[in-house]
Image (cartoon, rainbow, N blue to C red; front, top):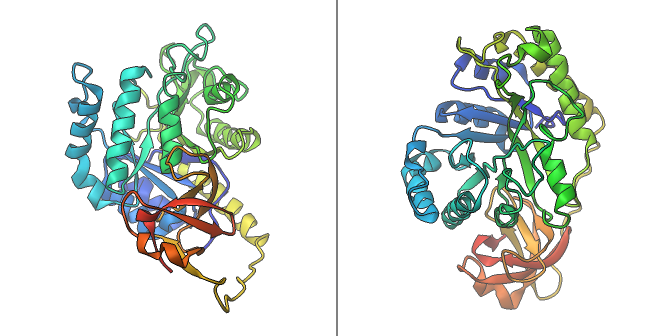
Length: 376
């Protein structure tokens, strides 16, 4: 299987079959692809690219269920239950749960925690939409809500879920050095040291230039799609350059405001520049492949004394923790298909809910939830 590109800028392809088909025939393997409201397009991309490309589907049709007049946890369960038929159709997909453009406050934190617990119990994946842009006048503990969202951050890391903050340039200018707008999450890293645990994965769920000055993309880009594409490449380079806390990763960014339809967001047809951007991604992944040296794993002739080989049944992999708790620090992990070892005395725990096993793996050793383990 070809390598996935390190290019961290992908696309919201929306409901257009044209953009999906361009991606499928291009041979490009972007790290993240986001779809709006279309299971069949997500399935087609997954069938072509496999599990290496993270596919995020944002289902908005039922967001009318979400209202702050209800208790947050009850509202979250109602939304998840209404969406479950979609979850079942695409178990490989990460779902961006929750209402758009809500202030990150205690209600929204409780909503997301309840949704994550509901999904985790049913072995679904989530991309958790932790919205919040902020302004230079509002510190990180203000309306962007990172202080009250820390329980969401920590639970998402323990479950392997993705955080999906929005990342707009709200002043209408595409400034790669602007950390008050597009790169606000990096200010949260600075202001809350140690609060983003290892295992935290972040994907900018929407990236764009806000319309509040009435100019949209036109102000920064002059309605020139080649300049826009150059801006995307600069954005990708900047995301690769920026550093995160230890164990925290930024998967990429999906780009908003590249609609095919004729509405107030449209400055140009994104299909005009999509082939070139896909060509860039393909060229980059080819360069990556040329530097990959395949080293076959050493054959295992015998198991360590009094141990049993185990694997995780979670296709997204599974964390190894310092203690038998989902909020304990992550000390390693077991990728899907890899093998670890447990004591022969713990075999009866495999597949048992709420049970834990002490696992030794190449990445480290510690406790893993037995309900997601099986004999290898």
